Image (cartoon, rainbow, N blue to C red; front, side, top):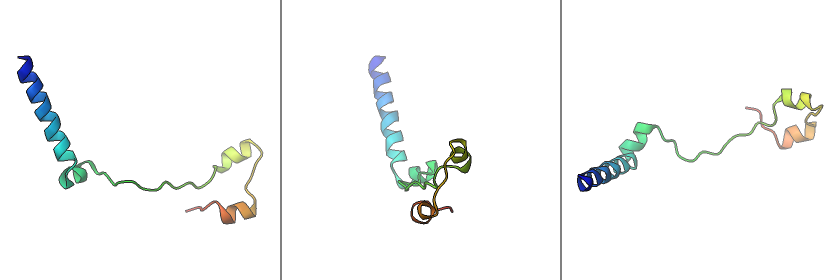
Length: 66
């Protein structure tokens, strides 16, 4: 029995790996690939909590609000 279980486990894993690494499998799981993250700065409520704020220069150069 052990050999049969090992064989079918291996076949199941190879089949799933093959499918989900194919174009159809990638579309099935909705994988978008590597995407850069976007950081819009520290939220205003957190800045206020610590008595901080962005300067106009920091806002212009570093933080992009979209």
